[in-house]
Length: 283
Image 1 (cartoon, rainbow, N blue to C red):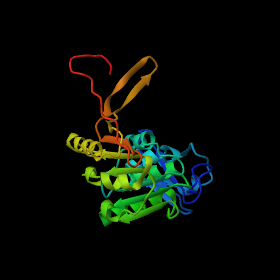
Image 2: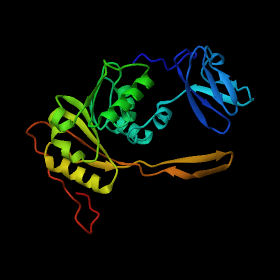
Image 3: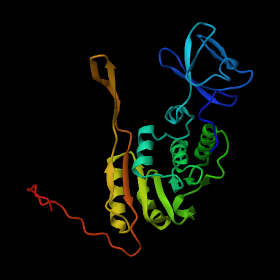
Image 4: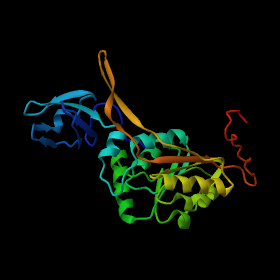
């Protein structure tokens, strides 16, 4: 987790160059490297040693703003084996599932490694993430993406297992279990056995049918609190002086999140109390 995220640019750093039309290019700095574009070339030597937020000019006269890329930018641009979890959902998982420094996290359905990058950053150098992925080709892509972002192998913090979660899981006393798969309801019992009391299960699903089956499976299991289901929508705003209005486009539905907390062994959850139909009186 020692990958540099600040200071002057150095050889090996990944730099994001943004042109006046907000088109972004990511390059890895090399001693003799050159970034080529139809707007001209930029030798890497013009970036090495410069602070973040510098402006460089191509041989064709186009100016580029240079920063290290943010994790959200990297995950959207990374090579994909499977679809990635959007940054808006990954950040909600980190926040709403309370992924904390030092946490022991189990992830099932590693995909292309986007969520894994967010989880590793959240648990920090003292935490650990174990990722289960059924398909070898997806695991290979994820490993390359994670190692590229963090600048090398993450052996101290990350274990990638190729196999089915239910058949392969060997962890106990995990703090969090994150499920990103087609049928997370099949893994609820395995998650319950792996989680420590007070731990959180969080499932990412794409459709209302999947959400319903996941909620009912968690509810019927008996070891979890009442599951909470939600989604997040993101809309940008245009601000130019007094011309303030919502953008015409937004990041709408990408997936649903379902979360619940592991109860202590042998404890039965209190029965749910519903509001009587036709009344607004609180129970």
